[in-house]
Amino acid sequence: VEGNSILFIIDSDIAWNKGNSGGGIYLNNYRNVEFNNCEIRDNIAINNGGGIFNTNDSLNFIHKIVENENIQDTLITKITGNYSRNGGGIYQLNSNYGFDGIVVNNNTAEENGGAIFVQNTTSQFNNLILKNNTANKGGAIYVSDSDLNIYHLTGYMNFANIASNIYTENS
Image (cartoon, rainbow, N blue to C red):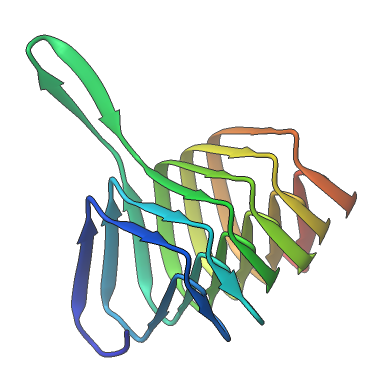
């Protein structure tokens, strides 16, 4: 997907895809991309971004609480079981983005950022769960040349040869 537009992806399951970059979704030059209650799973990228490859975009993950017959349910986006060279779950380059209430688990990157790879980016993470992700550097998050603010992060059972949760370089 390319272009200077706004894209909303709601209540979607993106699974079992393979690509050079962006195994599940490739985003380039969008003004704003918003995910709500999606599952991005079991995708493969030969290079970067097993689940999502995003460059030059404003990317947002939103969660919401719905109430039906006095029962509350939280609708969140899950990024799980994806594979790539860098950014097993998400590869983010030259962009601004915010995560609020997402789960990124069981992703693998051969090199950097099992769950999330961030470079040349300004980002904010809120209420993020990162579990059971694997990479050489930054089992959960790899950050390079970026400004990153993290609030309410739960990271556990992530694995890397260097920095099982967060690896930072020039940030």
